[in-house]
Image (cartoon, rainbow, N blue to C red; front, top):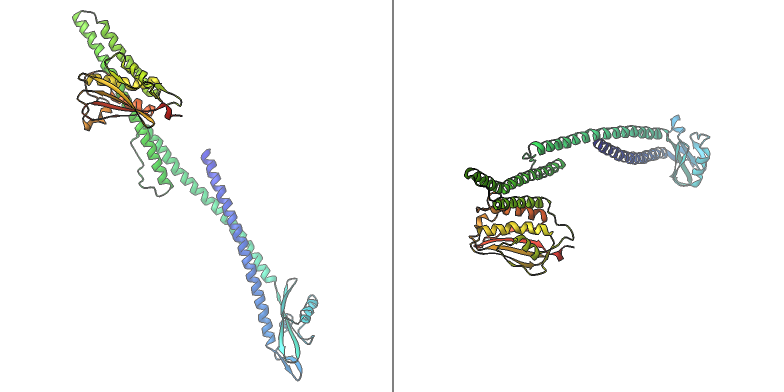
Length: 422
């Protein structure tokens, strides 16, 4: 329905523009034709007057015509000498106007009804001679009317043709758009890796193809992100479940009961994994949200042997549970790899607060500073959520996190300072 409405709008606009253009052209052409025919009528009148004037001469003190044997010419050309008609027959319908032109004594034109009158003085010594000719305007007016009618007919046909062409062109163009959209929709569901690959856009269809390619790329990335999330969940939950299964199998083989502490410990780790993953999916930087970084760090430590060097009253613009979800996996990761010491520091850097989680372990290889955020590449033999989920939480909350290869375990988290968010 919307496509049909758009097509009608384009066709209507095309017809409107074509009508305006045709109207302007018809008016301009009619005005130009009127001027041309008017000029032709005046030229014919002057030609006739010159032809008659060339035969006027004076003999024996009288003005005479040397040649005039045409009765037809007598009806359209008249010669006056000293105020008297000496040649031609003036029709009663124009005789009054002809005499006025003669009495004026100067060359001029006048229109009477459908006739053009042209008076011209003829220089003859001792005499006042005037030649008056008439040109019928009816043939010229008829020609103008026919031309106007033909122009209107051709203009109407042009308008109809423009509307038809616009309808066909828009329908074909929209068909291409519809087909491209249908293909993109199908690819998004079944083959997100496919692209139009039309190259550098040369027209609107090329730009549409490029836009759809970008949308398909986002869909593909979203699906890949979803797969990564599934991998991360499986990776993070598999370890505590494996431990629980191993404890149960060991108890079954030995006939001894499973130690409650081991079960509770792994259940807590499993619960922490699920909670943190849910926070990662829901984390957002909401306007007005803030928390005390030092308190969040102590909550993330949870009684473990970690040194805290975070200044008091350091507030960041993230929710407390998000800060805890970011720091807790990093601290646990540091505890797994540290030799003797894990510590956390914070410092202000412009409109941000930079948190450093450090340990005195072997550190991160420079070639692995990005790979450590991939599922299954965190290293070590502990449980923990690992750096991949930390990166996911950070991305969801608009926080930057990066590993630093400086010869020790070092992960840097950049949080927006509370005062920087309004």
